[in-house]
Amino acid sequence: MANPFHIRGDRYECDRRALSNMRVDREEDLAVIHSAIAQRGHNVLLYGTRGVGKSFLLGLLEMELAQSSATIYPCRVNLASLRSYAHADNASAFSRAVLLQFCKTLWTDVLGKSYLDLRDRLNESRHEIHLRGKDETTIERVYGHLMLLDQAARNAEWTTAGFSVGVRGEKKEEISREAHHSQVLPFEFAEFSQELIENVLAAHGMNRLVVLCDEANLIPIFDQEEILSQCLEVFSSKRVQFVFVAGLAPWDDKVYLPSCFETRRELKGFQKKQYVEQLVRNVLDASDEPCLDFDPQCLDVVFESYHGHPRQTLDACCIAYDYSAEAGANMVTPQSIMRACREIDEYHISYTEAMRRERDGYRDADRQSQ
Image (cartoon, rainbow, N blue to C red; front, top):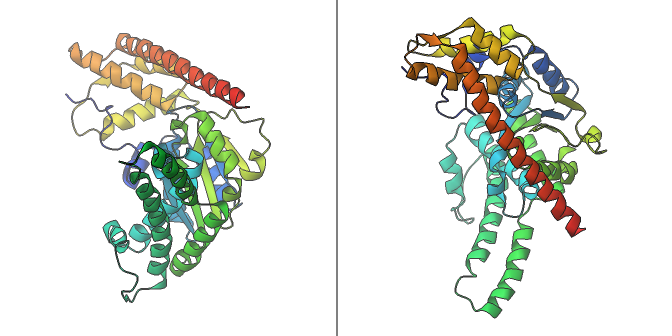
């Protein structure tokens, strides 16, 4: 008997029907953020503990913006893999990641073309004559600029192989200069995004870009702060708005956030046990196979232990389901839930300690550099 609480496929990708079927509560949170974006033109900082449902809420927001706001184009960017966009640091990679993802989604979702076609355009000779629309040409120019600069920086890095120590020292200096020039400057971000909005989005009846920055909480907390502090000009770009999904906000005393993120929203666990019951029931009902049911006391234990936290609730149900199935029980028992809760609590203690050591190490390094 398969465990319906096991994550299958990519949990970051969920179609609209699945989102609607799994939705529990969150009406107020969604209404506040949607109003801030669509009506007041705000940037939004959405934060909360890991697994509280920030990415799921972002999926609901993306769906609602696409359905109810004809002039707004939502573009989702996963910041968990940010370092792959630039070798220097996450802050320098941020603008480039947003623009590349914007180009990609415009090409595939708005123009309806294959991404491989866009990649192939990088190999075309500039002397070739092609009859293309202004929207295609604009995407190609911005995308090509970002990708070719990156290739130049990487090619310079590869040329270091086989050189003597002295020559290698000279090459390192050259690499540093080329990698520096490949970064997207704040005013370039504004120019590139403006070109894409005016020449592509406007041709399809849209005039605003909303960048949904997901999974920033998966990168170190000091990198989150660095992005927010170093990209102020980017966050202030005309006709571009941001929803930045972060971990718990330790930056409440920072003075720059109120001007950049006019709306801040902390996402918390479900306030009522009935929402936890509905969440568990949604998972069981979505299964194509017969499932073990839950003893009513199980949900009492989970709600008292985790105060409606969605991920911890589902993790506890998943572990307890396996325990009960292995024992041959005809339903998930309170004893299995309590055992699962103890296991999860031990993990969170070790995780919190690891994060504390990471923050302390960063602060020590910062003090030494000063």
